[in-house]
Image (cartoon, rainbow over all chains, first blue to last red; front, side, top):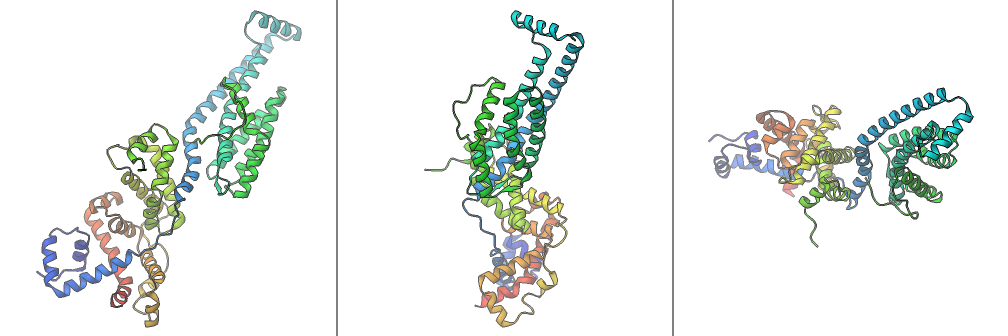
Length: 257
Length: 192
C-alpha cells in the first residue's frame, strides 16, 4: 500500500473512510504515515481547547426571561389581529346605527321618551347606549392586552435587567390604542375609564421607548404600577367588560406567557 | 429526586403548558449555546441563535415526533438558525475575522520565547480561536458538526445543501487550515 495522503488520514480520523481496517493496518506498519497521523491527531486535540465563553447555571433562566415576551407575542398575534378587526367592525356598525338613529329622531324630547319607553319595556337601548357598550367591550380587550404586559413587568425579577426587545413595539401599539380610547371615554363622559387609561398611558409609553430596563428602572416602574394599584384597576374593568368574576384583592399575578 | 424526562415535559409543553416549555428552555440552553458559539464564533450571535432556536421550536413543537430525542431535534434547529445567521451576514463563504496572513504566520515565524509563552493554556486557546477564524463559514460549520457534534458526513452534506463528497472535502480543507496554523504549537506541546 502506498503512503496515505492527508485527506485519507483525515477521513480515517473521523471514521469516514471506506476501508478503515486496511488503513489501520498500514498506519501500524508504516512509520512515516504513523508520524503524520500522530501530528494530525495532536492538532485536532488542540482544537478541543477551543474556548467557549462560560454561561452560568442561571443562563437558562435568563434565556427564558427574554424569550417569554416573544412567546407571549406569538400566542397573542393571531388573537390580537382577530379582535382588532372585530372591534373595528363593531365600532363601524355602532357608528352607522347612531347616524341612523339621529336622522330619525331629531327632537331630544322624543329621544328621551323613546329611551324611557325602551327602558320600561325592556326593549332595545338607544344608539348612544349601544355606543357606550361598544366602547366598553373594545376597551376591555385593550385592557386585557395591557394587563398581560403589566403582569410581565410586575412579575419580572427586579435584580436583573429586563429585555424588552420586540415588546416595545407591542407597547407602542397599545399606547396608540390607549390614546384613542382615553379620548373617546372622556368625550362620552366615562370618567372612570378615562382616568384608568390616563394612569396606564405613561407606563405603556415608558415600555414602548425602552429596549431594556435596568434593575433600577424596573424597580421604579414596578413601584409606580403598584402605588396606583394599576393592575387591580385594570383587572376590575377588564372583568366587568368580559363578565368574569371580579378580582377580590390586589395580588401579584401568576406567570403567564 | 430524578428530573422529569424530556418526553413528559415536551408532552405538557405541546398542550400549551408554559411552565413545561420553561423547563425545556432552562434544561437545553447551555448545550445549545455551546454549539451556536462554536459555529458563529461570536458570543452575542450565539445568544441570538439560542433565542431564535427556542422560538422556532415553540412554533414547531407540534411537528416534533415524540419518539425522537428532543435534545437532538432542538440541536438541529439551532444549527439551522446559526446557518441562517451566517448566511444573512454573508459569512458562509469567507473567513470569520482576523488577518489570515497573520494567522498563517503563527508558529512558523515565532520565536522560542513566544512558543514558551504559548504553552500557557490561555494563549494556546487564543491561538486555536484565531486558527478557527481563518475558516470560512462553510468550513467552520462542517468542521464543528463533524468534530464537536459527531454529525455523520451525509447529514452535514444535507444541512449545508452540498454533496457528501463536497462535505468531506470541506471538512478536509478546514483540517488542513487548522494544521497549518496549529501544527507548530502542537509540536511544542508534544515535546514538552
